[in-house]
Length: 336
Ligand SMILES: NC(=O)c1ccc[n+]([C@@H]2O[C@H](COP(=O)([O-])OP(=O)(O)OC[C@H]3O[C@@H](n4cnc5c(N)ncnc54)[C@H](OP(=O)(O)O)[C@@H]3O)[C@@H](O)[C@H]2O)c1
Image (cartoon, rainbow, N blue to C red):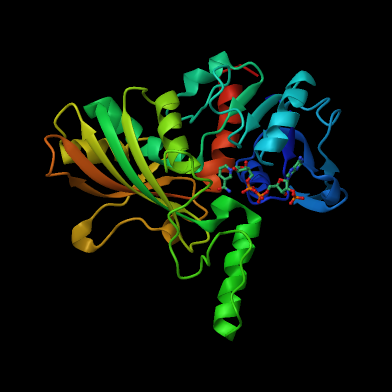
């Protein structure tokens, strides 16, 4: 089997660290790892496959001899460095929002639209974490019942904002327990013991950018004819986003058929038994690869509709795992 030299850009971030872990756990065929960060990170050590490797600054020249570059350093870094990396000969798989809506860039969830990879020209985008888990769950239901409209409310973990937000929640927990004043710098309000209906910035129509991403990315990945209405909320949870998803469909829904399709969908774990009080929650999905689905109910307020509850680890399937699976799919399809 061929082996690949892999760079991880933004390696010291929340997603970058998860990428190293995911590559190791999945025994990705690696001939060499190149951890890249900012100038201030240069020389710091990261562990990979039992070895200590020094972080280098990501810059022009960093990608020569690299086959695959996994980017998770934010949109500004991706806008500047992804074309450089592509021109230096590697395939870029980018976690930021920088390239997702570019027509020449495939936006891919391997369980949903792997064939889009055939059109890649050096840069491939990983969708937003909230979109990934929602569409992994909805793909088999769309195939069966044709979804017309999605109404989704998210309950998102602080790790979705990066390592500084994880630190902020930890600090606020300590401050609360010791009776000290609560300080904040990442979120506009205290996140501890709170729920903030703002993820990313507000746009002119009153929706946030996160909510808009869920609409636009669903259209690009699954079906442009589906109506999508989203409300995204940040909670004081460390890992895993949860989503209450309501769908309206063209065809009548049979709950048993829906449950069987979900149970056999690659990447989904169905946990759904209300009589025994069984449903997914963040601590169940934490550090796991699957998208967990439960609380299946018919929506009795419309002709054909249903509700479901979808939970997944945002750092794993929502970011690092999906990116590594894209790389694995490129290898399987012989397009790298
Ligand atoms: N967290 C999630 O659940 C999630 C899910 C999907 C997508 N994403 C996306 O993935 C990206 C990273 O997210 P994150 O949560 O890992 O953020 P993070 O924890 O803040 O980490 C970002 C890392 O990138 C580094 N970095 C910044 N500019 C760089 C540059 N020019 N060159 C090299 N490294 C650079 C940062 O270094 P410094 O600390 O020195 O600045 C930091 O180590 C973002 O675009 C985010 O939107 C995140």
